[in-house]
Image (cartoon, rainbow, N blue to C red):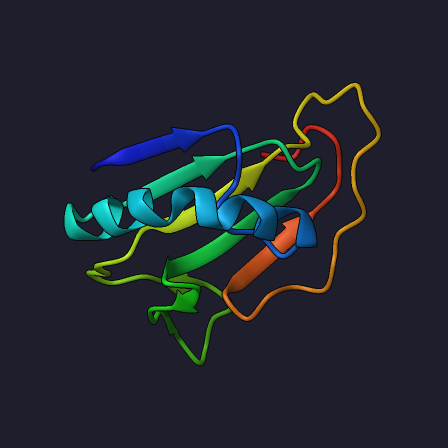
Length: 112
């Protein structure tokens, strides 16, 4: 597995993330080319799990009709997570409406 960690998020459902996206565009291209598997992000004060994303678009994942579980199979794009709520002494952010590439989110402190 290839895992990247970043304090500032490139993707999340909050409008706060859009201001960082342009700062990461060159990095995102490299992550895609080198088949990064997972990007762990922070800064925004809630938790969110996203699917594989490249160029602001969900790159495909699979759900099995008989199960709420989501499987990601051989994606070329990294999966993104945001973990800004765990252990935060600051007030957590409200969870925004989920972006099309988002799978789940929570603002429960300590949720990882």
